[in-house]
Image (cartoon, rainbow, N blue to C red):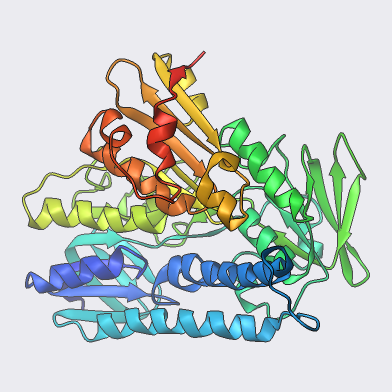
Length: 459
């Protein structure tokens, strides 16, 4: 006999728990299903643990630079990787347990621990139980993509999830993938003391960024001793006794690299392949992402998809915004839309990259008349004072409407500074609003008005 609920939520990532709590608060009888770790990717293998590790790596880096600032450290400095992992685990456990306790203590909310699969468009099987509801919300997240290149089945490799169990210092970490996940781990482990080589198939790192941003990121990493191999076609892996050898087809340098450990960081895939979506008639694209409309509804009435599995933004903040959109439409008579969201994200190397809106390349492709200004971090006093002058700032403006189209801040505090631009964009205000603002000195943000005063036509 099936159990009936007003709503069922599959997954406890960033949007699922908040939605469950809100629906339960409104008096609905809610079931939420989690097959493994409460909190999803962000809490367990993504944002929280990786940024905790980034922080440990930064402390090690700053300590090594102490002499530049007049700080003399007697004796040698070592990194205790077991303690690094322990600190990360303690922070993750607090968040993970917090989500689990929150859900299990929520009135009108029943937690099922197991794997949920659709039986039809409005019923799910969890173990031996069948759950039914008129409203079903899919929040199943994603996982690391394992590229099918030759030899991968013959070697041991790590993904972002496996890296969470590492409590030792790899002698030489080879990272396949030159985008956000790979670059963060590359700098992190180089700062811990590993030799690191990044292997990227494309001609430059982080392809979605403009060339000048991409090159500046490469310079930052290479300045710390990270080896970067671009244009790596026909990649394959081989076991070499107790090591791993990655064969390349590159225009420059050695045609192979041998290391102690291999990390695959070549993208993500949604966890939609084992949900029984076909039984429910829920449509996905060729990559497995669930199609949704402007209010996150799938093609099946009464079924929504939120978070990474809908392909509309693989970030914690976009997943939470998915919850906000769904709750606003269902409960608040507030017709919020996915299309109103402005793309914004950060790359957490050090210094970080904050990105919002369109890139220079996207603006050029749009064909619109635009203005652009850039400023190197060497001309930002706050960066000079901190001895961190790598990177640049860039901003693009529509020449007719005077509205900001996009911006990037690669430098000290870039992940925070970018929000001053983002807020103006959400307000629909002209760039002159922030240009005429009086910001605090000395800060990085104060140079955004200065940069805007130097806008020039995009040639």
